[in-house]
Image (cartoon, rainbow, N blue to C red; front, top):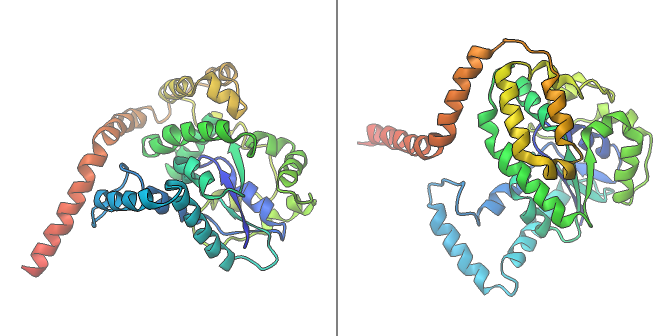
Length: 323
């Protein structure tokens, strides 16, 4: 059976680029983004799930099962890990040694994912938070403020990743996206050494030819770049440029804090200095004000109100059709 490589990162951190590079080695098999571990781990969570069959009752029944297992939750997680790797092995080449799972939302369940795979390899990919925010706006918001949609990633996900890395830094490895772009050979050599594989120049020469099965993952970057370029490093400065965006990002950096940023490989004062030095424009300011206000309501009221409303709409359609 293949061994797992889990590539942890926030969305828009450059994980697809690293995934493509590693998959040029015949020892590494992968698909776009499986997402398969999320519902498995969330089966144990009390919050964050709405189901038609009553998730809370299902969770309570599952807890009863876990209480009968010799090692409780750990037995359950390891069994899920074994079953998942059996699935991954069936979609992998016979010659591959590893299967690489790159699913950014695993940031929300990073501790449990590591506990699933006692023999796994875990790579934490960090990127400048300002560049992540900018990429979310440009890629998924078409230049408009949309960060409230990714609150779980930017706050819960980031905090989980940092905490998980701190607890597992002896067995995991970290890499920065900026350093990967600036010194790709050196950084890939480190990664391959961690994976106990040989570094080959083709990792940099052939990654642009890689096409993944599956529809998830970054399609924009795949189409834009066929070679390693440092141009994305400062691209964020053209997007986070009006006073409102800078204010929000300043507060976000301070929320992350110096300690977490240092673990990620960044310095708070340097990032704040870079942010303050960006050219100020007033583009999108009125749109941003409206979207920030809507985002506040979305975060405060969206989950408890929208989901029941969807259920009521579904029930009303059923009543109209069958009564």
